[in-house]
Length: 140
Image (tube, rainbow, N blue to C red; front, side):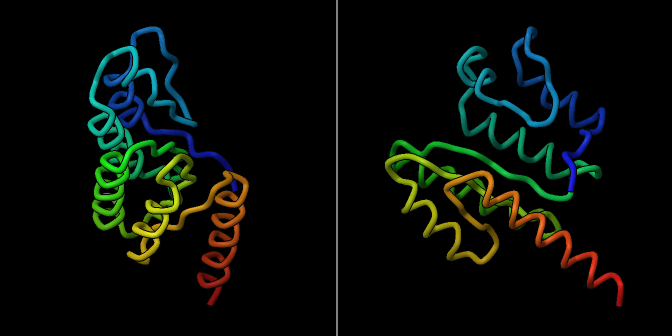
């Protein structure tokens, strides 16, 4: 398993969100788009994840996020569920931390579309197993 090389279209979409000084690549860091560019975090997250999940070079995505308020928890869960539904062919795994991490985990995993872990290594391992299983299934 290797990190995807983002397509020029995806890079352009993410660069449009980012401050001029930020180098854009994979992994994608959206925090400067929110903190420096003063864009709403939900808009940045929506636009960036949609660009990534629409990229033909990307097979799956891992999101690392901190949920600090119940409102963030609700909004981010709704957004992620919508994105997972509109991209059913792309696994989305979230590493969520913060005060409302457990609530977010329960909401997301109840959908059966998004896996939640607390550490990135577990997310990477899960995607690795999924990739091997997918390759095994293609062998039939």
